[in-house]
Image (cartoon, rainbow, N blue to C red; front, side, top):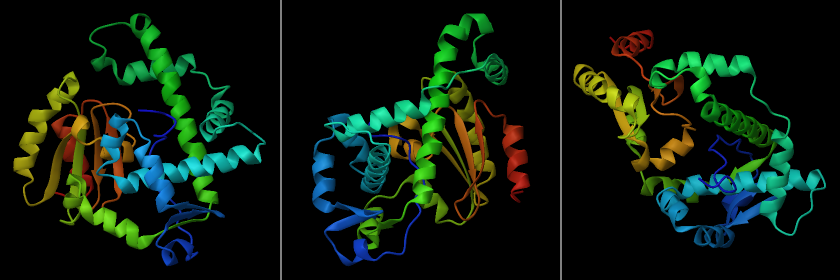
Length: 272
């Protein structure tokens, strides 16, 4: 995904200002700046085809990305970063945020230890050339996520509630439907070409039968649920996420997870 546009979905702090709600042409107010419907449509039409396909059924997700971009441009200006294009301003700002990040030897060893079963018998020395840049990129992305999160926590952001509700009603995800049942939900994000993901399939098939009527057990293919994967910041697969009856995430696990581990976690959440 393009890092200029898709900077990872995050929850927004909504302000009390009524500007966005009172003007149907304004979708969001970000501090003292607004994102209009016209601006939204212009940005959406300018997306490359593959990204337009991702957001075609997730307009709310795309407005979230525009909000983050607006905040980053505002922050770049506050650091006196001046470029001819806003994307260049954002890139320079984010480079300065991650410039000094490194991956330590202990971090590398710990990650290898936790995911050794997925290394297909290869030693740390053999996977290091691939693993080290991957961990560096992940660490940089985590830093950027926190940076944007901090910007949003300090900002005053007001959305046009009517527009948001209308867009949300148009598209419901498998998770939205699961949350409506007011049951504990377990979802596994994976892919058909991933060995540990394939190993998770029979486990989830068994759990789905055993917990019918007690909990929602969902197995989701990343390629078919890109907006959800972006929303829940899925960086590695398979990833299992446990949600309570209110739809709040309470636990997350990355990599193969045994049936026994899943059952024990469900018991902790009160599901027998």
